[in-house]
Length: 202
Ligand SMILES: C[S@@+](CC[C@H](N)C(=O)[O-])C[C@H]1O[C@@H](n2cnc3c(N)ncnc32)[C@H](O)[C@@H]1O
Image (cartoon, rainbow, N blue to C red):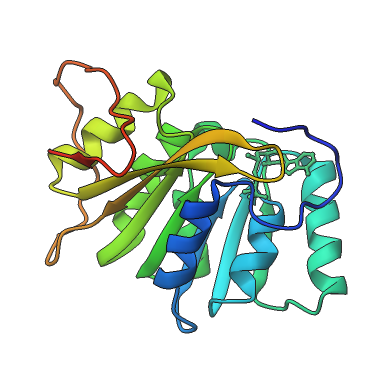
């Protein structure tokens, strides 16, 4: 991870190949969920119909909200909530009333909880994108998605300008998924797969 400078980065805080794939995927009519606000919030808002961005840090949430307004991005909704990493996304997403989100970029606090609660709001064939996917503490999220039949690709690339190596995992929801809340997992936790471009076989 790079430095938390308090200044807005020029591009999303992701490996360049993950940014490239997101750029290819995102359609102008997509509604997107994000956790962890920042440069990615503006970048997504410039490409999609809407982005709802969950932020745990009130000062940072205020700064991102102000910058989005300064840039004229009226489709970026920053939800500053210190509790979301534990409580998850359900309440806020239900309140927004959009049922089928096209993609969730999970890059904030409480990533497993965020993924568990984002799943029912992602449309069939939609995406969950998890940054820093090789952290062992996210393994439960991988297990839940794999058990629900989501297909996945891991991208390994460089985060610029630091030139640090990063891992971003793209998960795609199966067509016709019923989007039920995940049941409690009884699967053994295995080593995360981190090979460049490797397919995770559920
Ligand atoms: C991994 S960062 C999220 C980065 C964001 N998704 C992006 O691509 O720009 C996780 C948290 O770091 C904080 N943060 C993000 N960018 C920051 C910056 N430039 N300086 C200080 N804190 C930052 C926010 O609280 C954010 O929720």
